[in-house]
Image 1 (cartoon, rainbow, N blue to C red):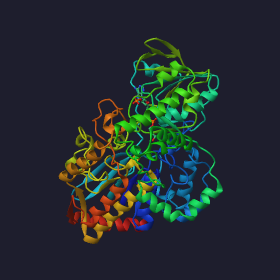
Image 2: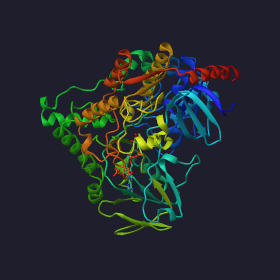
Image 3: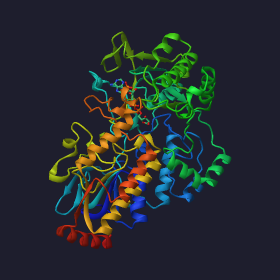
Image 4: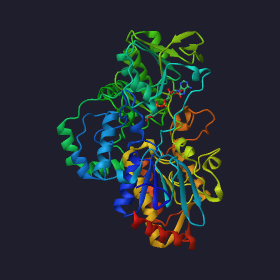
Length: 553
Ligand code: NA7
């Protein structure tokens, strides 16, 4: 079956965690006629693309970085490690796609090149890279928060003649580093996860670091069968706990730092460093992300750990982060700082010794030349907004999203946009997105979108659209939350600061639990902040032809 000139109830763009669940929910729970499109050749989204060595889940992981909607699925999938490796997440998603028969309604190798809203018909029309078009009443954009690669623009970089890979577009074939001199630009999660793995194989690795990072030990280990059994037996409770505690399956501490002596605090930090994961931030004392003094103390604790681990004091000095810990995404590593004790790894601090140009065989910095055979760009993404802007849907009056979002990423509830009726985003700006366990966040967002669709149906309405006033109020709410923390101080991708020229705006709703409560309240109170349109006469005619189409399919 192809999607050529077909009519659907809903079109979903993307088949990562979010898009796959949206397809399952809308099709199987609501009986909708749904088609998903993906430019990739298989399911997985982020996990389909980010195949760099060392890629792992960098959040509370197995078995919690997974779908929660099906106890059977939880029971049948055996997670291997506490921090699931990229290929294992992908294998899981492929299993889910087969298990829930999703593949027949996903069209791969198909980019949506254009999406336009037809006001009279109250439908979205999409065109694809394969020359097809399709229409639907609803457009669900599950296009990925970390998808559009951020590529550095150094003089001569295009003339570099060796192999060059961005971590977010890693080849499917194994890349051999054996006997090679490798340059890695970027020390976010992708750099910090991949550098230790590359260093095990390469002749030499030169890391080009713009901002030193805090990174905490992941302490990845095999997951025991007892742990899996326990999670399965308590699944409903764990799921409820995740729904109510910011997407994580454990309690976040209310312990007060002021009640402990400095020695007691240091002892707790030590214990949590040993435990690994993000506990040092969320389970030491309340307020690490909002109180400067407490944050400074935790930051200094981690800096001391780096000093302890890295034997060469000059390298250790270059690795000292100087921002508030947690205000750039916390990184979990497996032996990152230890890697600098290897003879075949060196570090260039770009703040002291900036890159001046690339030659076909080297990177020239102010202080010298670094010959390389392979260049790894671990330079991140135009995060959260990049893939929506790339899609660039055209809404009411033909106004494009690029026009609308030129200076600010206005949205309502992180999922809808004024001027773009019946368009929904999963993990858009203004949603908890990357600040919540994403598979669960996607499920809950989809459930809310499904509620909107049912509401329109039940009320005999044709379209819903956020108002600009609601967007302004939402912007205020998102920023009020962010301003209560130390986040606005950082040059992070959370703030849009990593992409030259990108408007600086905090891109996520920080309290996931509160957010999903707000979504429910909005629905229960009759969708405050939205305007509704009755079904237009033209749209009715289209709806009946969509029904015929469905029968044909
Ligand atoms: P990140 O976290 O955005 O990291 C990108 C890194 O690349 C970071 O160290 C950047 O430095 C650096 N960078 C970006 N552009 C340049 C240029 N032009 N020159 C030198 N260095 C540069 O992306 P990741 O892929 O590591 O991780 C993204 C998320 O994916 C991560 O949080 C996980 O959730 C999974 P900067 O810090 O901006 O100075």
